[in-house]
Amino acid sequence: MIRKIIKIDEEKCNGCGLCASACHEGAIDIIDGKARLVRENFCDGFGDCLPNCPTGAITFEEREAPAYDEAAVQAAKQGGITMTGEDIMKIKDETERKAAMMAHLSAGGEHPAVGCPGSRIRQFTREDGAQPELSTSGSRSVSRLGQWPCQIKLLPTQAPFFDGAKLLIAADCTAYAYANMHEDFMKGKITLIGCPKLDAVDYTEKLTAIIRDNDIKSVTVVRMEVPCCGGLQRAAENALQASGKFIPWQVVTISTDGRILE
Image (cartoon, rainbow, N blue to C red; front, side, top):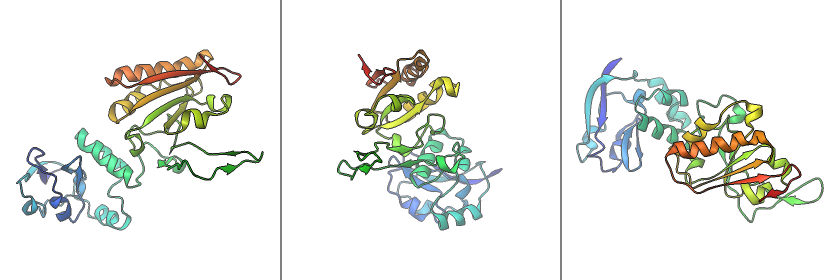
């Protein structure tokens, strides 16, 4: 529908945050030091934010926009999540959509691509001094998995745990073949696992989006020596090239009897 809605001039915006505080509906967030209208259906068009802007960065415009959704606004005030992942995906401007999605996920919202409740994204804080778990054999070990989910097919392309992450892209068999996978490879990294033979997909597109759209510091690929694992390595290499970024990366190959092959 065509309706009156606010427009924010980022060139004039100084990031003071007064507009976000004045907006009782929660339509505005401060992202990367700039005010952004990240929830168009939360903007009622009354302009409470306008007189609070010291630089005159906010004006009205008439354009195509979703209708004001009062029920969603009230639900957000009660639940702490401002909008659904599906609503965010409807935002036309790519920059605003990405910013809104990151804010949504950081607040504990669910990614629209993740339908299974067991696949809701989570990030774990691992302390080096944490008490190891006692296994049935009597040995002690610490999980180094930094996030959930870890399957490439289930992971969203944007999530808070990708910010500044060192990626481990591993064939799922490697964790069974190599005994010290957690300490030697997973520790301090965000783990992405998959098997191109079993999934019957090319991971290149998703890996490209993850590397391109997030602040990734390095990429480590751990694969098995078997030929089918070459698909995982090629996908990672193609993704690095397609991302247009120059990121440190390495490939480690594990033998079927659990050794690191030079």
